[in-house]
Image: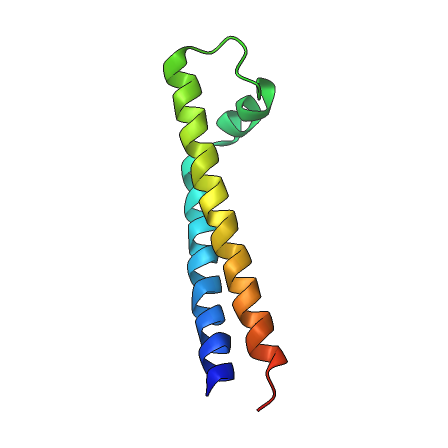
Length: 84
């Protein structure tokens, strides 16, 4: 019972994480030009404070999605490790 909860919970979290990564990729780079510009000035040296704040928010969102992915992987590994 406990292994099923971890396994299916991990699968659900991983599907949510995949959706979040796809949403993040779609919002971060809507076109190829913005994708190329995103790597042009990654440190935001010539950016205004508003642009730096926006970049910091996106960084926090990426960290949250990465944490969700790690929790999903942990739940799946626990669910698969517990014998039936």
